[in-house]
Image 1 (cartoon, rainbow, N blue to C red):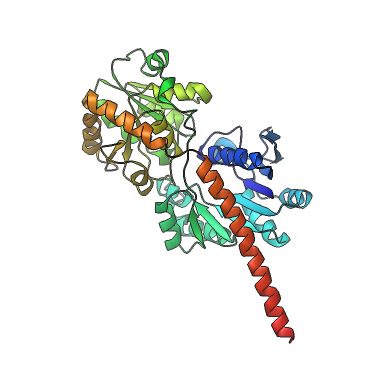
Image 2 (cartoon, helix red, strand yellow):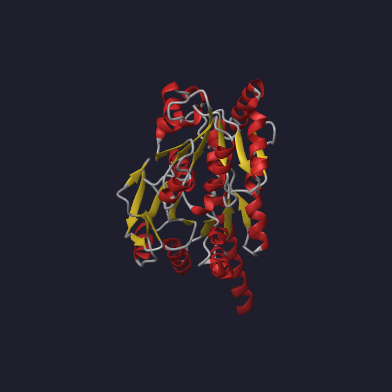
Length: 387
């Protein structure tokens, strides 16, 4: 099978979407499927035998943190050049919208996947908040041109079903259980993340630094406890603002980490904190659990799906400082903390990337079968009309 994946984000960018795609591509290439990735041109030309076709990028005035690719005719030329059996558009919004349009226009079977909860993000940007119904309508229109749609959690599927998205299925989660492991624990890394106070309780956040991640809500926890340290790993448009918010607290900003360095950061903390309620899943939750970290997370549909309260992590009410502080106090018992670390690792071991990658291939085959059935029904209708 030849598959064209059109995505708004790809290597060398690092986020949950890229992680999921690269794992799927590795699986597809092992089975000798041809893969073409059409993505913003950031210099990558190939990945694990998959061709990467870069398209022109633009820096948006409202989000200068990274470049985007706007809708462009080059997508049509690339689809005609590679002539795939199927097109998978990931997070259709800008260049992905062009992918949806030309896949339909050129008659290619189309599958789409929903990863970024943009309409929910608008709740955090007052200027754009009134546009929320418009955004829902726009994304629904794009996704409903696909024969099959994917999302990454049951909670988001329920919401998309309610919003009348067509034929939505859950694309299961996975994690690199070898790349993230308690064995990466490093005293040197803990010293760095704790700013030279490794004896304190060390909490870790990993992710994009943006308003909708609600990282600022962790500050009261640091103000209430002088024996707690917070390491914030990542970068993004809100970094300078967050550095000001956390000024004077026991907080370290590291910027991006990758590979073994990131694995060491996970394995060297005491717990992972996840204050966001806007995620469609949050792959970092499973990455932290694979590293042997219990997760302290704000309650949301996706976090409640992944965290067993009191066993693999702790859930608190979003915006409730007392609830968050109480969750941290639960980990004061060293034996309980070690038990939760073990439970977290054992839970993560159930979720290698093989299963979701195989599932994606099954979805591809189902999309092809659906397209074949549609064409067959159309031919039968035409034959009956001509009788």
